[in-house]
Image (cartoon, rainbow, N blue to C red; front, side, top):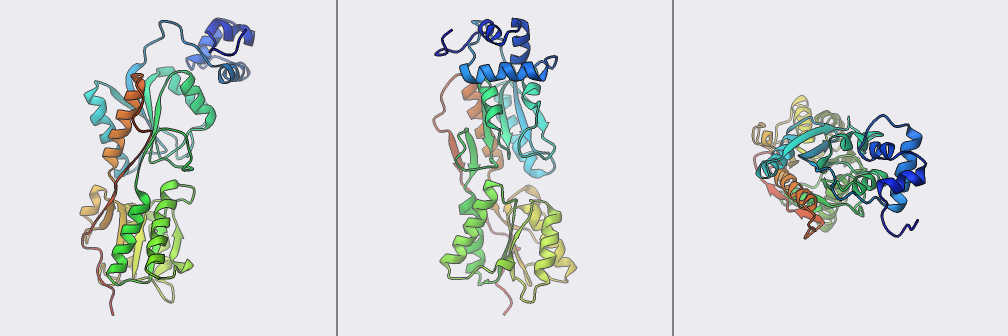
Amino acid sequence: MSSAEPLTTAQIAELAGISVATVSKVINGRADVSPETRARVEDIIRRHGYRRQKRPARPAPLLELVFRQVRDAYHIEIINGVQSVASEHRMAVILSGLRGRPTPGHGWVQEILSHRPAGIIEVYSVLTDTQSGQLRSRGIPFVLVDPNGEPAHAFPSVGATNWNGGLSATRHLLQLGHRRIAVITGPERALASRARLDGYRTAMDTAGVPVDPALVRVGDYRAEEGLRHARKLLRLTDPPTAVFACNDALALGVYRAAAEAGLRIPDDLSVVGFDDLRPAQWTVPPLTTVHQPLAEMAATAATMVITLAQGMPLAQTRVELATELVVRDSTAPPRR
């Protein structure tokens, strides 16, 4: 048997020493197959490929939107962006969560195959090589939004100009006259977090302002973390006069810490966020933040995955949409 061409279900069954029906169960994500048999079939598919029959089952007219977890306005923007494109194509959207994990867990692919979506949109997470291979072997395309991982990943993706956003946020504070500028980042493993921090460092370096390590704090994009880190920053002997929070939720935590310390924003402390979610306009004072076009990013990803599902190539596999600083009332020159 030649391995130059992908194998049919019958050929996979012959190699694995099992029935065609069992191979079909593995291919379609059925649960009633032993882990050993499933692993054997997946290994054959990975090494040889899988050739569909002339009349494969049509994918369901739906997109699978996968989040690590759904918890705030960030996710609502993503959902709205995907739904706007899906509705144009008369497709439904299914939401699934990873319970906070950065990578889908064991059995996730089988769940996907059981309802066979036309395509998958992964938000702020990355598939393993095994998972991506399993989806590709079944002809299910996927696109990453705001990918969490190494910049060298080979998957189609849509992101934002995070480095430019961090640069513009920090430059704004420098131009107002701030020099003691703190930054609270997201997780170190996250590509966007590293890029925003790099933008901050570049702005400080270009202005000739040394970065004090005590002013660099690593959070996890939750308001509670913004509060915890800002409390520590404001207790320093030489506290910051401004804080760049690498998302709006962190900025809300900074607001709370400032209020606890009896400080007024922006008179005593300037704050810049990142995302420009709708609540940013309603904080007191309204938050200066970096606009990240989340709905547009999601819509772009949905268009890309539908294009792939239709068997057409992508004009561009790595898309970055522009960020933009939105100046409101949470920033001002430092007190003299």
